[in-house]
Length: 385
Ligand code: NI
View 1 (cartoon, helix red, strand yellow):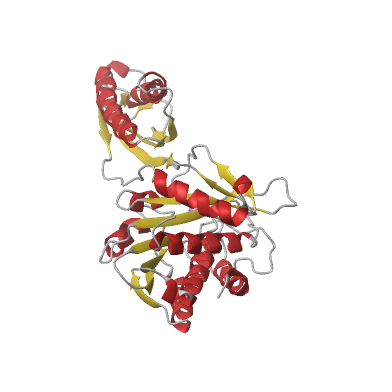
View 2 (cartoon, helix red, strand yellow):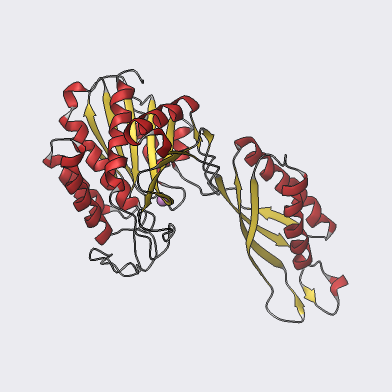
C-alpha cells in the first residue's frame, strides 16, 4: 500500500481516536482498537500495560518509531462532526494524529515487508502527558533483542503550516522538572515574631533568589527557566505559620546544567532558610524529563528524507522549544531524531495551539507524517542514506 491508499484509512483511524479519547494509563479501548487493525493486517504485536509494540520485518538490524496515546482533561470546542464524545476529555495534543500515522506507517511497511532489510518496531506508548510517563514503561521491552539502532518520533505543531517539517540537531525540547518543597519554621503570634521563625519571609527570599540563580550562576548562552507557580502557607492575619509549601518548574536545554541547577537549589536554599531559622525540604522522588537531544547524524538523515518528500525549502530549522517530551527517555538509550510536523491549514494565518479546546490540525499532514516515518525506516534499514 502506498501513502495515497493508506491515507483514507489513516483519516478514519484518527477520527475514531479523536471521538473516543482516553486519559494516561487508561488507554484500554484505544489499545484494543489498534490491536484490531494490526491483527486484520497480520501484523505481530505484544502489549505492555496499555501500550503496544508491533513488529514488521525480521533480523538484527532494527529501527523503532513511536506514537503516544493519551488525551487531555480539556473540554473540546472545535464543533467538528467527529468531536470528542467524552465530556471534559480531548485529544488536544494531537496524539490521535500520532497514532493514526504510526498505524498507517505500519500498514505501509507491512505491504513492503519483503523489501525491508531488518526489523521495524512500532511503539504505541501510553501516558506521554503524565509523569513518570509511558516511555519509562516501554523502554525495557523496546530494548529487548533485536534492540533498535535508531528511533524516530514526531509531534504535530500548530505553528508550522501543513507541508513543512521542523527539526533541530542536538538539544531540541527542554528538560522538564517539578520543584516541590516545604519551608519549615516555627509558628508564633504575628505580634511576637521573635518567638518563632517565619517560613513566609524565608520563602519570599527563595523565590527572589531563584531568579538570581538563573541570571548570575548560569552561562547566559545556555537557556534555563525557573518559575515558582504555587505558594501555600498560613491561614489568617495574626498567625505566623509553621510551614509553607511551594511548587514550581525548571526547564533547561543542557543536562549538565539541569543537574547543576538542582544542586544549587538545594545548597543555596538550605543556607538561605538557615538565615531565617528555617529548614528546607525538597521532594527528591520526582521523576522529571531530561533534555530531548537529537543525534546530529540521524537529524541530518531525517532532514534529507524530509527534503526528498517536501523540497528542502519546506524543512524548517527550529530553535529550542521549552516544552518537555518524554521521547527524550528513549534518546538517552537509543540514538534517534524527533521532529515537529506542520499541521496549520494553509488558508489560516494562525491556529489554536496545543492543549487548547479549539486545537484542530489539518489531516493533510497525515500523508507527510506517514511517508516520512516509512522513508526513515526503509532507508535506515538499508544502510542509512
Ligand atoms: Ni503531546
